[in-house]
Image (cartoon, rainbow, N blue to C red):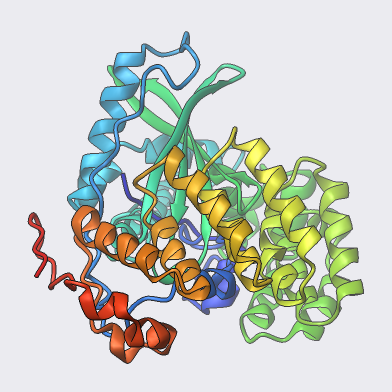
Length: 444
């Protein structure tokens, strides 16, 4: 099953994407992407001629009924049927079908609770939020697009949290642009199972919280009568909407010093908003480690169970060679999601960075033993094999990529990473995989 990301402050400021007029609300896309591209690129060099579309999206992987805890809140057969249908919609790139699995009306109602929107305007206001999900730039559109262009969205487990049945997904973006986890809250709506909310690890909050922030900032431009039902932090956010927009704009430039200066002008309650804190953390990583550490401490103070801040810092931990911190974050995250072999791939990227190839291989072999469909692990094993000059192992992995994943490995002679391999006796005897075609495998 393959899908993609939402929209969080961090990914939004990195990509400079249009803000959909919601500023810190963050348009519904790219929620909390973890950018570890530098590690992953080192861990997975591809042949220079490999086209972006060469890897066909793997079909949705049906969950193993024996692998997850017994469900009591929703019937297991209903959950499995729902997830299979959701996976088919993603695999086939059908945006409208995917959206039918999400109770967008319910999400909008929850997010707008307490608003005193004039009756004549309420329908239009909420429909604009809903309409965004039918666009390619919305959450669902980005999910579909990423999943069909080399990214992946994989069911990790089905589980229960309190009174909720949930389905946890791992999202990996194309071109090693980052990863995230989405925990779908499943509810029965009428006669059907629907997604009632989504906890985004990379943003550290439910999607309805992100949507609510968006609505507050948008409503603040409509007039004071729209805000009469808001109190506390919500009202403070509405009153500070203009500053929050400017804050978000500065982060998008990026103007790190400007972001921190403007943060100090925000009301205390608004400073504690998760999205606001994450933008500050992003800016802090562009200044120095001490500033980053203070921003991180404030996030943990606001939410001791937060993973969004840690996940955002992975890239900076790696680039600054703070390997112990990097490993601690991944270890905590692995425990939180109940174990995920993909995180072995992430740690292997760190080991490759350290030139500890034996340790990297051990991690990657454990990953593919647990989940043979992890294409990132196979690419990383190619890299490790090239670095160790174990060219027979590299060939085994390249052939695996061609036969099992329909990958066109391209002309490896054009990629410097393969230079020694191309000179080897193993290469001279290798029957190189030909261009793979969808639905078939050809080796010549």
